[in-house]
Length: 275
Image (cartoon, rainbow, N blue to C red):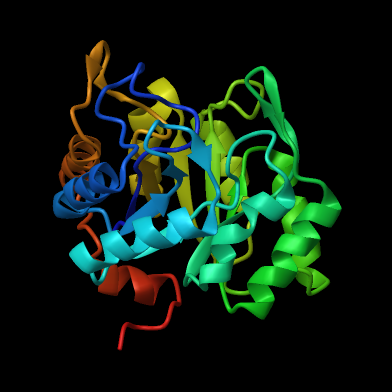
């Protein structure tokens, strides 16, 4: 079994300092949270960006500033900018970070309920995102919130509308209105992807660690962070993304799996090594 790749989703677009004062907004805060996650064992930082007042944005310039600042501090970390943005953003807004030619970026695999809102990902939108990633040499992380999202993206890959093998999936389970975060659902989704694919699970809210444990045993990879969950344990808010990563590291080592470095993660994910 390969070593465990840990992704830290350090701020997201929805959670705020009112939920947890440690949620980062400013460039300095983003760098500090990325560093805390990296030092704890995260090989990947999943990047959303905010204005200094916390407003979510997909501004190319804001992504450039934040990612450059993280890169100066953590030169070998893998960064996966979000093309999901926040609900209600246009596809053109959401695509802006792909103009920076990151090695990876997220690609959401279908429309779904998202709490009280609709996360809109039409087929034309996904085709446009796929074309951009093919043109810019970006490896997608395919974000699947529903079981049907897997069939949709595999059909697109067969048609050459999105990058194909080897594919990296992220199963985001536990969003209100989407697929529940159960082991049975996770097993179904893992069994539905092509042989040779890599995959990550993201348990939202109270499912963060109850989904992480079976994922570790099954050979998948784990995402945690303030985007998905702000609690270290019931009623105890995490003081940093690093604390959340540290808990996954403890779980993984207790279960006999070591943690992948960014260099090892690049090999596992079939990315080009750093020069």
